Image 1 (spheres, rainbow, N blue to C red):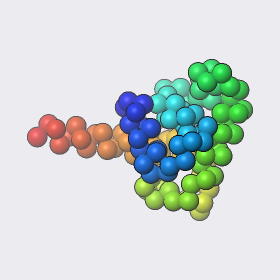
Image 2 (image 1 turned 45 degrees about the horizontal axis):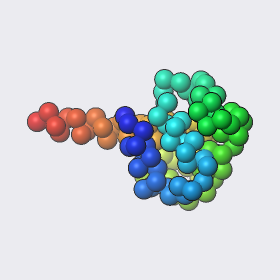
Image 3 (image 1 turned 120 degrees about the vertical axis):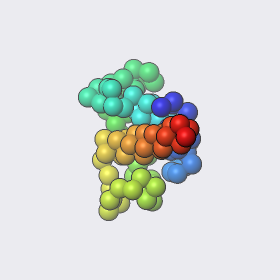
Image 4 (image 1 turned 90 degrees about the horizontal axis):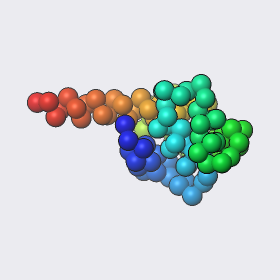
Length: 105
């Protein structure tokens, strides 16, 4: 999956592209699942920030979202950073798999 695909999906479905957490979230999604245990550390190095500030900015970004329905996830208005990133990855991976299957016909 390409980074621009994550950026497009997040911007289209959740907006708030002017928040710092948006850039961090796009980067985190592009690293998932290969670097899941060190995702904040990797993102913080790229943006010259601390892992704590990356985690906090992503959490802030997610807190501004009112509708999670496009992820087909059960949420009572809160979702953890890791679950949110995983949900985006899964959503786009499933969409990509469908696109590849249709292309094979």
